[in-house]
Image (cartoon, rainbow, N blue to C red):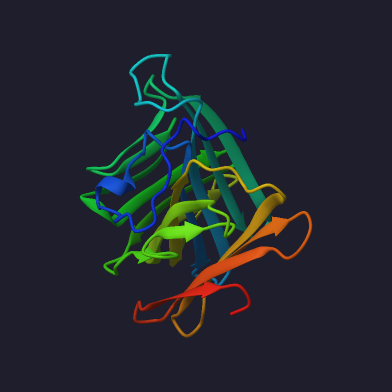
Length: 253
């Protein structure tokens, strides 16, 4: 997993294009579609939902409609609330219809889990089912996307490691969650992250920690650090004001 030379590399100054970049990127080694939602029911109880789809390429190349597809897919879903935390994970091979992502109209799926919209991602229906839990949530936002780093080029080491990275942190959510057969109506807010790259971590880096926060003021903040085996972690993030203006954060800012 340390070799990336055969895959497409990132270019500083590259302009992200939508709705194309909501879809899969065949030339890159890894990417993900990641949604977290903070929810509340009519009784004031707090709930959380998470829906994630990862694409990992064994080799560069376009998706093919057979078992020769280069792509492996992994989905992870979770529900948190009164009674604890439940999660489920599913794996799939690309090329046989079991999992994939289409840009327009937008659709990401693995088995019967789905994240589905229309022309873009302004409205999404998010569904997943695990053992003893389920959620079906409607996400809506008319706000612009947030591009992290330098117009979507997000450095991860200061040594050339980077990803293309954007978010939609302004979703309003309605729908229902279900635990042990009991359905509960919920509302709240959600945050979608989209990221893709071909590069492994730099030598000496051992993993990362990532946070996305909705503040009471209406502002949002994304922060991450990539841990170093020796020395200080590489830190960066984005401050998003309540009116959608962004400020890149770097180091000890």
